[in-house]
Length: 570
Image (cartoon, rainbow, N blue to C red; front, top):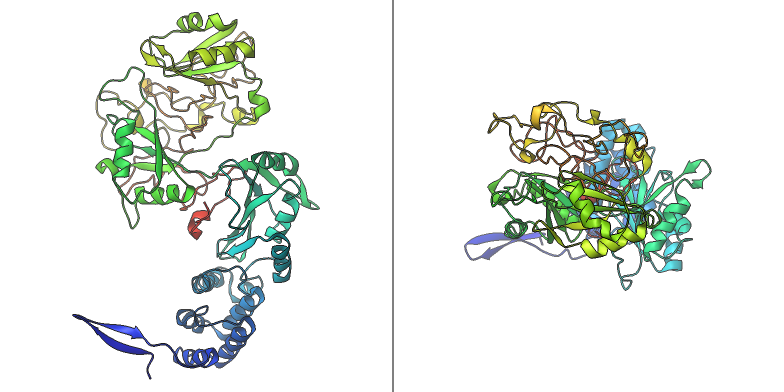
């Protein structure tokens, strides 16, 4: 009986797979003969099937054919590595094995055959230690070519956002078992995702760990940041949040938040859109309902990653408003801790009309307590009170009220860390005038003298640069006489909301501290090319060329391939 028979299905004839009648070993022998597998490799494969109790569903014909194309020694090495790993924790075995062999082939091209066989093909701790850990905890292990995920039982409810820590500088010989052992000292762990280098066959040296209790994530960051997990190997640990927000530029300024949300939801390819954040003009007209860009929130990171890929081009192209949009990950900014925020005496007031002055604000807010000073910058302002109680009282009374018929949004200002501010003090991060190698894309600001020529962006008046984050456009870098600015910066004038008037015309400067997430760093250069996205000289953040988010979790500028390995866990 042949393995394939022809079946007549109406107007077409299809191949129908006939089940093999015989033992697994007989079936394996038949397939190895058909695929012309070397006899030594076939023997090793037969022993592997027997040792791991495999079937042709685990190690299908496609995998055997790929194995047959390797030199004999490499084929035997692949089989020995599979046997050592026992494919423990691997869910989709054929897909995993195909990826492993493809990556091994790339590794051979990069380092040569002899070097490629000196390191593990499937990195991980010993199977014995994993089995013991799983027996002790009741947890499960899921292994893909890009990560190892160790997680709590299915009946444990997934925590909300803010429970995750980034763990960097993990020695590459350590895996999830050692990370779990150390970090469970703080509290109950929901999951650990250790990222792998699929080609080199080793850990990338960083992981993401989620606690069931939010406070445990903060406690772990305090306790283990700088802690030696083994002698001489300090960890880098901080609280992190999966990025679920995209920056979307080049949208029509005449569109309201509702218009943008409706347009995005017309495209079924863009799944799980939950919200749109726009920045309007307080002195808005019908044709200027937004500033030419917005932020789009998604239910989870994977949905955001998929949308970014589709909006930027690729096999499935989505063009809301029939426009080539500029899309990137929103920069996540570090949030001050609770202790820092508990001492804040400064209010951040946004959505102010141009006509509102410092003096007017002082009159409106002084009834709640003694004010040290007021500073208005374009359409937002900072109110400095002498006492925190006064700031809280004003916040409760004034937030959501109208000033000159425009509703204002008021919050406590968020001071940024000294190191971050000092790095952002000087405006030399904008190396060229708008429209040249540096500058800000002209889609977000007014053109001088009408429409610019093709490829030109226009720019702020007089061709000046937008001030760098943390650079005060009124006082410059010099500290004023009252001595408030230390080292040339003010801890609040990091522009709490990054898109409010940092430059003439309302350019969105990069990297301002905000809960909303900033415009992508290095967002400059030429206008978006056909196919979407910023290419050529337009700068991007480290790792931004990958489908996964770049440096989204905090810590060092490490590549994150989490989106390349079907992260259904996000």
